[in-house]
Image (cartoon, rainbow, N blue to C red; front, side):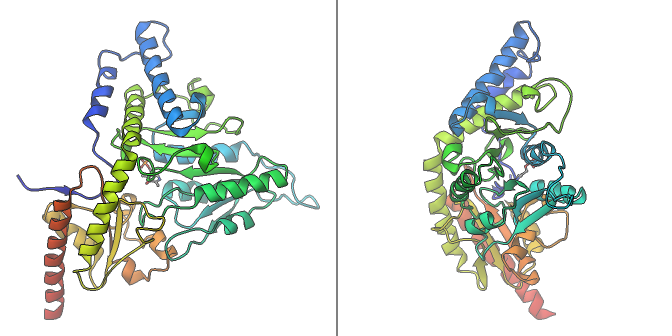
Amino acid sequence: MKKTIYLDHAATTPVDPRVFQAMRPFFIEKFGNPSSLYTAGMEANGAVNDSRRKIAEILHAMPDNIIFTSGGTESDNLAIFGVARSNPPSQGGTRGVLAKRHIITTQIEHHAILSPLHALEQQGWSITYLPVDKAGLVNPNDVIQAIRPQTVLISIMYANNEIGTVEPIAEIGKQLLHYRKENKTVYPYFHTDACQATGLLDLDVEKLHVDLMTINGSKIYGPKGIGALYVRRGVKIEPIIYGGQQERHVRAGTENVPGIVGLGKALELVQKNKDKESARLKKLAEYFINKLKLIPDCKLNGPELENNRLVNNVSVTFNGVEGEALVIYLNEKGIMCSTGSACNNNVSERSHVLKAIGLPEKEAASTIRFSMGQTTAKTDLDYTVKCLLEIINKLNASLRAK
Ligand SMILES: *Cc1c(COP(=O)(O)O)cnc(C)c1O
């Protein structure tokens, strides 16, 4: 059998067998609808609530702060449209001019944030897309400076999926609390997309001072198509999906019981192993980054490993080599990685994240992302560097021959 090495954990992760075991009964024997009043329904409802309690505990939240969704994208959409819809247009500003309602974000968010915000812009909202520095970091002072009386939401990702930048969420949250206190207002709310951070960083919503937080099963060895949105008590949010009364009327539809059980189990497992796994991955990243120095003309994108970098992310520019070609050649060697975010792979469009950190177009097109995880061993990285050297030498030789 061909050797395969999976270095795309930022796109999705395999399901942990223990997670699958926990989910299994809820497909077949315990298949009831959680809203039903007989035993099978109560069993399912109990499992949903157990998972909710488990997740809430890890986030230092209350169980009824957790809304289950169909994944990271829906949680992000619910945070944005949910808050937007709870703030209908009002007669703001002076002389009867309708003041534009306002949301603050960054230029390097996932499309699950940017696309909903573009849609709101079409509907007349004003959106501030804050710039980031060369490492991808947003400045907390810029965030606070951007607040207007009409700002209802700030959404900033916890860790970036392309270049691994860990944003100063707790610091922004702290400054925001101060702003709100001084201005005697509950707005703007603060949302963070923690899809990439989960399992590697602290998720305590009290320490982070966030009002809303997106969680995703598919990146933490849980199933795909399940996620949650943390919503602090008192935060006003309207549904985006209407129907039954599930999830405190915020998210209608029969609960994905196996998915919910899987999400709770997955989060429990990664959380337990968080410090150990982070330390292990950090060592591997150090090793990998050092070995990559054998390859001429390549450089790491995003922050240094010692500074605000997600330890599983290694984004590298190989100057003079086409990133897409590299991904395809690596695949022939059994190595799976990506040219950036998995969601962009069909679009031959320059990454908005690499653009925001000032990477010229040519370098952006020469960039690939390795993202490590539980399946990654040191020998995988040795093999990857060996293959990279081979492929790049061959590509360069054929370029010279032309
Ligand atoms: C993966 C990801 C999402 C989207 O998650 P889906 O499972 O595709 O819905 C959103 N934000 C970030 C930062 C992600 O990494």
